Length: 153
Image 1: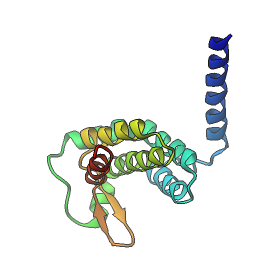
Image 2: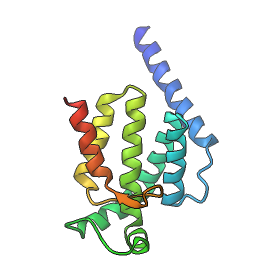
Image 3: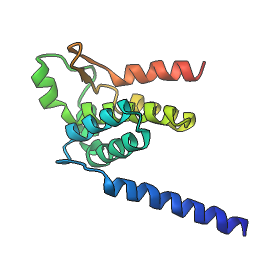
């Protein structure tokens, strides 16, 4: 009986997440749109929604981001528009992973957040995020390293 209840709870939980994902508006499904929506959800403290947007971006664009990462051995420099244009998938996937890690922390899922931050650092090191308030780029992988230092004491 206990096993049945655990299975039922797991199935209902998956159904709830799937239903929530269906209710969200992914817009044009561009990586930049999904990342912007994830930032908005994170800032609104809708952490589950933020994770759904980041997961969609990662699902759709991580292969392209890995291709971009594989050709690099340092952070790209140059004109802002060139960095946006030439490294769009890498930048948006790296940023989405950072957002996802922050959302998981807010939900109290520290171990999962650590795993996400480690993936970001290990696979998408050279992604950058534009800070419109800066205005400048910052490195999500470096910020993830800082988060891990805090989490691991």
